[in-house]
Amino acid sequence: MENVVLIIHLLLALALIGVVLLQRSDGGGLGAMGGGGGGAVSTRSAATGLGKLTWILAIAFICTSLTLTVIAAQNASGSSIMDRLTTGGDAETEETDGNTLDADGLLPPPSSVDPNAPLLPRAD
Image (cartoon, rainbow, N blue to C red; front, side):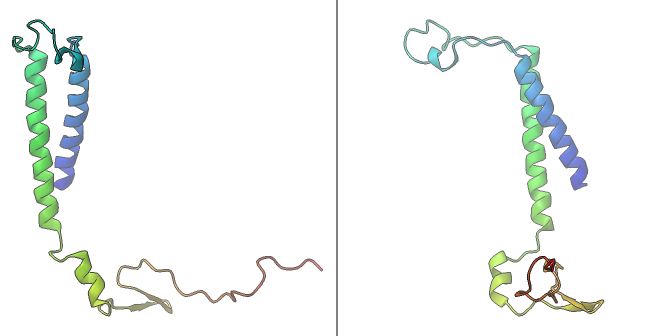
């Protein structure tokens, strides 16, 4: 479910970028706000098809963002990372092929190489 919503979210983002880039620029930008802009700020332009499509895509994008947030909150373990760090001794080890691993399997097995040995053998 999360993957489907994520794919829809990404497609909406690309479509929104495309629709915004297709729209005609009004020319003024932020410079139209400050003094002497004539009636550019006070008049409201008629809603075009691309303007309406932009609003629809933006609302859909926000809805998928909220949906992904809710899904991520439901998948959360319910405990803080700080709780896991302060308990310390809870990480269980399991024995696999003579190597000990932490609970997540993130740490490498202990090395049997002598740290004082030279990196390359001598060519005598």
